[in-house]
Length: 117
Image (cartoon, rainbow, N blue to C red; front, top):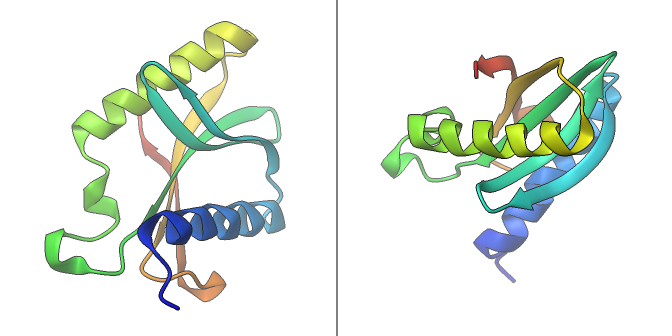
């Protein structure tokens, strides 16, 4: 049975969380959403809160995984992160991206500080 896009996205997020935990990050929450958008993973790296966008792009017809995090998507992520920070009261944070072309631990590219707020 072929995995549909939604299942592939869920699998990619689980794989990304495992990969990042193996690199010392701690999971805070998954799929945080508010009226501004959704953040796939929120984790901590030491004392820094990390907002993580997970992108799986198996078909490069419309660009690679990194190029799919457009300025508009970045703005939605920033607004969603600001909403989260207002609720939780934490300030030190960064935005990372986890990029994949297939759901495989050996095919993960982790970009720390992928963009700034």
